[in-house]
Image (tube, rainbow, N blue to C red; front, side):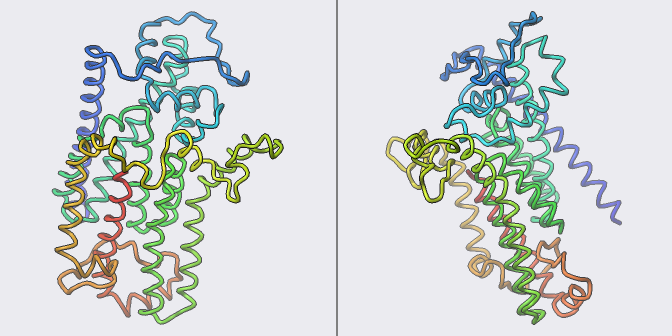
Length: 408
């Protein structure tokens, strides 16, 4: 029976992989076409000064075989891509570069020094770095589409609806960012992968994926919310269903430790920036953020260099951008409102209450997967019917949190 179910699912997965690859090839073709017809708005791609550190100097004394191809690839390094390629090439040289987290540059460096290293003499080192960035992000997007489908199958319990949603994901309005040298693809892959493993019961694997997402984008730390949600329900089950307060304490401690693990990479990155910029300087020489009680480099950079902060984006001059985003924002808001109207009890109770119609089996993230066998079996005997209902509630609550997190 399981093989019968897995076969159509594997077939759908292959179709999603083909659709994701097709969408990337189509998008890259459109990028090449429009760059040929129209001059780019951003002209920073030719900027390539020597690295400040001699340790990172890449002296290309050899003759490049196809300089025009290399130049064409380098011309596509614009906007944030300039920073990511520069970090991969020279490391973190300036304060503002610390706004760009290290996972993508690290992947670019790894790929350029291994698989793509023979191309350095063909198109040049900087072009190879850019090519590595495109390869990393487009492969990550294809894998993200697969995990999107897997998560959707578990949440929706409808493979066909999950398939349609995955196809829409492959052709989403923000596709350009998923195929450029940006962090969207890596973040989507790690967040969706972490969510899949979480609702499949592999919480520790999910923690690893979520922690890595915090190395790709700063809002990866918000993925700790999934663990908080899971811990909240597990503690509730331990106290009110199993009547064991000590088990609830254990659940809370494990949940807190898992959340801390998700925060550690981002905190370590802040400490790395503090050491490089603030360490060894007198108070007069220190940057303002170095003297703060909590010297948080990332928030200072976002505020000082890009004017990013809480509600700062809500300005009249940003109205065209809001109009540009209004279709997808309207769809997201309408989807949430539809769910609130159809399941108000579940929505406002955070999944702790559900009608009898909602009680149906599902892959639940709320099981106490690390509780001793005797305890977990005792819990199943007492609350199997309620856990079957809450599986759907918990999954829907988590997926709502997920989409709100990934709307960024």
